[in-house]
Image 1: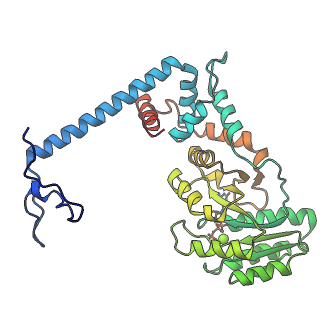
Image 2: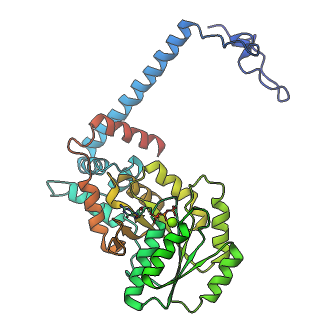
Image 3: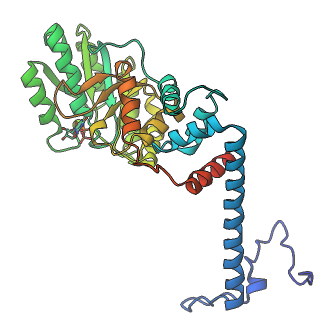
Length: 347
Ligand SMILES: Nc1nc2c(ncn2[C@@H]2O[C@H](COP(=O)(O)OP(=O)(O)OP(=O)(O)O)[C@@H](O)[C@H]2O)c(=O)[nH]1
Ligand SMILES: [Mg+2]
């Protein structure tokens, strides 16, 4: 192979000529890019195929190795993967499985591991008090959750010591939606425009036993989100923040929600729309990966019946995740092996 001695090394000051020396002159403005010679394109494709083949073979090898060395853990991993748990999370969980057991069927083991690791708020009752703000993306069920929490409270303590505050001035009808719930419960609603307004309103409501703050739904990428969260943090410093996480969203969306709302420092989340989720692998993966604790689980639109305390629903949630798994064969072995290989490579 001839040395590429004609290609001058770029100095620190001169920008690199971006492969022009090798591929010929740059196309002039308006001209079409010069197509790559057919031979080079073919070699490139062959190399890519070869790399994929080698990666897949290596993944298969390490997967088979795992199955031989630790058959029980491999079976637990299969059970966890069958509910669509992300490979990194499934691997971390399976690593906690014992190496041997007398159990014939490893699924209870996977269930037990999930149960033990699922982060939930332990000491919480269905009737909460204090100042609680619910944040989250559009349509996640924030206002409905507020209505459910408010209804629970007023059933037990009446509505005189309850107040609802809304920061949602964006969506048409948002305030009216909260007012409708408040009217039914006989509670007061306090719309606020900005951080100082929020602060003053909370000061006035100091004697209330429960103050629930509804916020405007915003996508994690929405430029206005940072401002809303800033106003909430400064205007309601003593509020505990709950993040509404819609369980039917896919794992990437949930990941971006958790990251996007991290500046609000949520104390826990409310897992909403569990009844609409076709699989719970995504939400469980994100909860486990971020150690995001679940305070409440919502599985329907009914107020307040469809709100449940998460620590009482732990087994129910994990069982449901297991029931929602794809019918057997859950996931082809080669696919699991590839996921396993990828997770090992990224570990
Ligand atoms: N199936 C089901 N629907 C729900 C649940 N929670 C809320 N919903 C419905 O989801 C829709 C949106 O709920 P909202 O409470 O308005 O959601 P939001 O997050 O306040 O929405 P925005 O304020 O527009 O961001 C409504 O039709 C609710 O009835 C749930 O747990 N299960
Ligand atoms: Mg709302």
